[in-house]
Image (cartoon, rainbow, N blue to C red; front, top):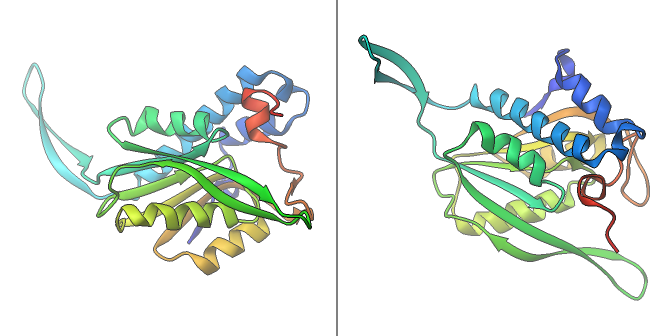
Length: 214
């Protein structure tokens, strides 16, 4: 299932607009803040899908019945671009366990690129709600690689993929290749270049947030 938050106008539009704007992007702190705020919005939306139970809370004057979610959550992200987005979601799911994955690109003699996982740090995800977030979803290959790597840690109750900016190709690829998954996006861009850049997209989220890499 794909949930596109751009179908309903909200303050998310402003954060995404600033993340796309090449002039505002020059302020890396602003870019990180917008990613974090975007993560909070996605966390709020995902929270509506969780399972809830009535819980009694003792106040100074009595007892209040409040529905609280009981799902155990694992928040996962891809280093380094996803850190600010992850932090925004962790602000809301503050009791969640966390997973971090490092992926690198390798080129062969024909300049063909392949993706490889360099490091993964994850709790057991069996019977938990898994949320994987990354600022952009281009081809979907990296996300699928990470998903299968995390499945070695157990079988989640359900998986949520968070991608503020996604390509149409990436969305279609994940829908075709992932089961028991909800894909949340802030916008879907129709063009993907032959070098897997989303157009209009936002550029390299990792570089914009943390500086150009060499």
